[in-house]
Length: 328
Ligand SMILES: [Zn+2]
Ligand SMILES: [Zn+2]
Image (cartoon, rainbow, N blue to C red; front, side, top):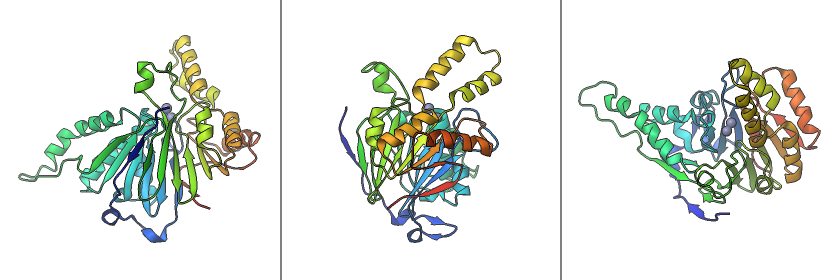
């Protein structure tokens, strides 16, 4: 396992204190908000794509930024100015689709506070690509002759993380590990290049572990050991395959089989989520990344019971904009 430590500069707090509609930063408590709880890639009318906000000392940290993240932040009463960093678990588009909107809206609203985007290798190229996508729009600006705007990438920083990396800022330490969402042969070129990460945030004596997308992983269980809060993905594989096949009736059987293999190896079932929470001895389990079109209360009850068969602790199947306290 690659071990190295990445130190970031202390973040400037005063310039970007989070102001919510409820009041100012020092009145707020640390919490985890599930902004978008639906797995991609099929959008639906009820729930947004994978995204979370972690609030620490009034600052907002976005953890995965699926399509709709900017709108979900607004619904949660969180301003773009308050977003200090974005942590991307992996570069599947249902986890990154909201990033162009965040970066574009910063420019449109003259929000140039420091923002760091953390993610696996490839995040730098991805963010550069987003700025390339914005180039003509920002050059044309608002069409006012003589108007000179700041470049869109002003004060946007990118830090790529690998297996075992730890970053510390004023609000928490975060450790990234490689999980099993990808199954490249070890030490292959792809294995080095394409990594899916899980994160552990150590926040003022409490620990929050976010699985990102992953299959079963011993390294993840070790990371989550005795965590106060485990936010885990979950996949109902049969349900998802049914949906995909219905949406693509001409899909060759081989392709559908390949997709089933990917989903089985690279995601966790309700049973596996419960087992992971038990093995890691976590205090609270929040399940997110629900199968597309899982919309009815009975679905939530069914999966909650399936997880609870394997985990005796406190479990919640999250809905969009649910809030979970962080801390002792
Ligand atoms: Zn996903
Ligand atoms: Zn994924």
